[in-house]
Every structure is written in C-alpha cells, then in structure tokens.
Image 1 (cartoon, helix red, strand yellow):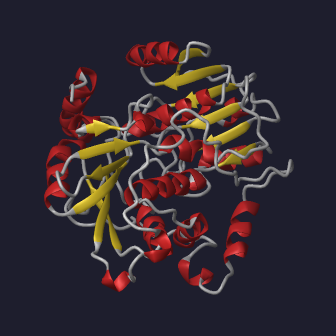
Image 2 (tube, rainbow, N blue to C red; image 1 turned 180 degrees about the horizontal axis):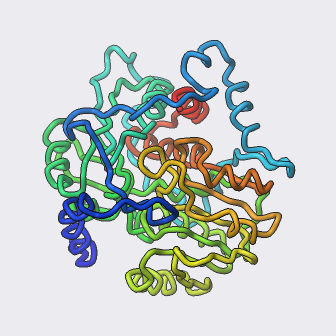
Length: 400
C-alpha cells in the first residue's frame, strides 16, 4: 500500500503536538477553544468511562419502564420547531455513490445463528482521544444484542502518538474490528492494508475490520451514510448552498454525502486557509460541477444565502469545549428562516449551537442519529447482519 506523504507528515506533527498543546495558552471563545489543553485522567490501556453523568430526562433509571416509542417521541419533541420540523430520516437511496460499503460475506443466516451462550466472544473497540464523552459502547452492545451476537466493545483512549502501538495491540489480542474517531480518522489510513471504496473520496477512516486469518486491516467509512441518513427527507438538498465548519474527517464525510445529493456550493470555514488549499483543490477535481471556496473561521460569517450550516468541529462537545459555539448568535441571525443547522456533536444533546438555533426558531438537528446510523453500518460490515436501529438509538438516549 502506498504511503500518503501528506498524512505521514500530519501524523508526525501529531506526535509532537502533545507537548506544544500542554504549554499553549487557554482560550475562552469560539473556534479557538479547540486548542485548549485536554485533560484525560484514565490510562490509555484501561477502558475509559464518561467524565461525568449528565442530568437529563434520558437517564437510565428514569427510562427503565418507558416504552421505546415514547422515549424517541420525547427526544424528537426537543428538536421540533415552530415549523414542525422532525429529526428522523429514512435510509438514503442505495443508488448514491459509495452509499453501500463493499459487502462482507455472511457466514450464516441471522435467523439460524447459534445461541449467544454458544458463540465465541467477539471483541471490538473504539480508539481516539479524548474519549470521556463517548456513548459508542452502549450503542454497539445494544446492536450486537439485537442480532444475538456475543461481543464486547471497549472504549480505549489513544492519543495520536500511541496510534502505532495501539494498532499492534488490537491485532495481537484477538479483536475483530474497531472504530476510529478524532483525531485519528486521517492518520489511521497509514496503517491499513486495504481501503474500501466507501472511504475513497472521504480519505478518512472510521471503521476497520481485522481479518481473523491474516490480521490484515481493511478500512471503511460509514460516516458518509450516517451523516446523510440523519437529514429529514423533506429537506431539499439539490442545488443548495452549504456552509461547513471544519476540515477534518467529519467535514469530509459531510461534504462527500452532500455532494452526492448535488448541492450547488460549499463554503468551507477553517482556521488556516493555506492548509486547506490542497483539500479544496482535491474536492474541485473530484466534484467538478460543484463550487468550493474556503473562508477564515474566526472572521465574521455571513450566512445570508446559506441553506444548510454544518458544524463538523468538536466545539461544544462534552469536555473542554462544552458551552462554546462555533458560530455566534449574530452570525446565525444572518441565516434564512428556512435554513437547517446540523451539529454533528451528540453529547450533550443540546449544544450551545443548538440552543442558539432554537432561540432563533431555526430548524436544527444534532449528531445523535448520525452516530447511531454510522454504528449501524459498521455492525453490518463487521458481522454481515442487520442490527435493530431503534434498539441502538434507545440505548444511546438512555445513557446520555
């Protein structure tokens, strides 16, 4: 497999970034909040737990006797605006480019699988840094249970400089696959033996299969389908203008998904325009019928002709940037009344960006459905079976 020189240089830079970040000054507003020092107390080899318990209406104890439909309806009602805009969307059409990852052979039919107690335990994990906010364990365990698979799912904190050692650990300790989250979605491709077409355009990996016979690694991207599946079917995308905040793996997935729906223009907001030029050039060549332009994220953002605003940064996520927003209220006021705000952050359910959107009576969705849909697709790749989406979403809502 050819080494991508750009990614190799980025990975080297990541390994040196930790010391620099620890000595950097504290920032209090906007996009600069991303450079704050991250404090993670758990050892990287120990499964981490959420940093704190959020007091929400979806606590596990309060939901034990609540019907599933009522849980989802209560959740949806929090994101219904005066325009009666709902947050649940059907699966995208299978005709979309790369919408279906390459099928993994099914070794036996789902309805004829052996009892859970007779199956060998399969091991899966999530790697990234920091991971104190992650809810993936609850989602995946519910999915495995829904199809009768005996499996574990671990949350393994992995700073960028430990990526190589972590992959060696996963390969040598019987894991069947793993998920990848920020900031490893790009550098992990350096360690893969094969990349599926589902990740070809995105150039970012979030799902990896470990071949049980050869230990070879095959990378996939399920974020593309997860992202588009969360957009309600009654929100038109054709010939629309989209503003994307960020240029990382989530942003690339969003751009790929929306480009397949033939939007007209992307406005990509980044901290460093010079560093984004190679990405912009690549996107222009890949989607030649779509306009791509980059803008400075910390300048005033005029969204007056933007139809869809996507936050693809971790700003607002539980942890050091919780309570921050990647866009100020005055900037959001420039959006048209029928625009949609899509925050890929899911924890907390209501980020500051979502709260501002609701204050302004703008349509908005958070990252909950995207997270569940991408996990749903990952399990199909890992197991060849179709888990229960509703069970997976309920597990997430109960533990947020």
